[in-house]
Length: 517
Image 1 (tube, one colour):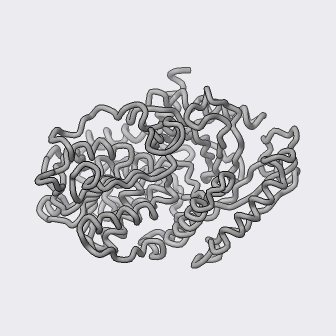
Image 2: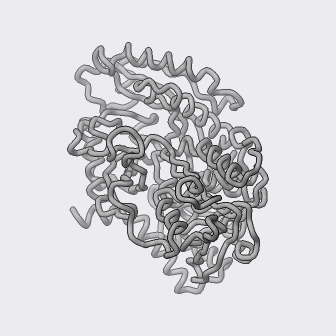
């Protein structure tokens, strides 16, 4: 997989996919398998935005049971199984624990019934899975075992715990890359650091996009019979360029359309299981979820991810990030007495933007959207062959994209071929990546030559697990940069700039928290 700009500029494609997060990457894979010639571009690196910033839990939809939404629950179960099946090295079963209290909805009887129903509804969940990838049945545990697994649950009224199993992404960036590599091996042409300035529209139809190469500054056109915009929170901004002839505005979207979602990572492993616990914050402190939302902690090798905090925000506005990180840490301390986390425990902050209902779904406009949005803009604003998709869950990205690619074929007036992405294993997704403190020359050269790493940060944070080392050493980064430079032709100044950029990213969360302390 190489960055072939001449091919993009000179070859007409069936489909141009704008955005290479998990939704765009899935789209490239699906469309390629169904016989379309595909180009996929992103203004940044592959999977570098919201798709990389999650708790890495692949939810099976148990929470939907409380709402009686069995349809969405089954959908989540099927998609969790699909990810375990097609990427067994990157998605593994995850044990989840929540405490039980009293005799009401949080009591043992209620959870026993929920787990029994979950077992019944998900009885086919392990179809086609290896034994090591199978999802075990949930069960109740007694009080002493619950506290042994997680000692910080409030003990007053604690009767035990409920255990169930979901999936866990070991490296979401690598999963996104695996979708793209698989697509490239079927003829797709991905390219990172290409910004779409405007869509090309004539005679009421889209014909491609005008793009700028952010590495060289060159501008050119990519021609395609159809365009699928899967650019997450930037989707609406890019689609707008298909209605007007002006370049995509740099200003953020209106405040009401999205929420900033924030997770923090602490530098130690709190437990061997993921944990779900109710926050004590109310509506005033939690305007998006309405208070008393579930907080989750998830082990990530020697670290623990805590999430998630939400606040209405303009896309790109991270001004509330530091206060959000502090608020999230405090929420965990309030919910788990004795945990006593401080700013000094935080080693990373993960953020992304998720769509709000914004009047497009029933419920509060400032609540998180619950349904993916797939739009055929030929029907909405008269621009034929232009489809957009914005999802709400990593877990169901594959299914949402399947539906979006169906729309592409309909818009082109072609028969819809069957989708095979739920069962066909991805290339290079069978071996779990290892966290190391150094990288071999072979790993670095593979990233540059075969995985389109063009910046040192691409290598450290997304092509490898070097950036996940508990204490990333500057010497390891400099050693990787020297090998990278030999392959990419960097001079000493460029090497120094790349190293500094990586070290700034590593230290940014702690510096930000200390600056406003």
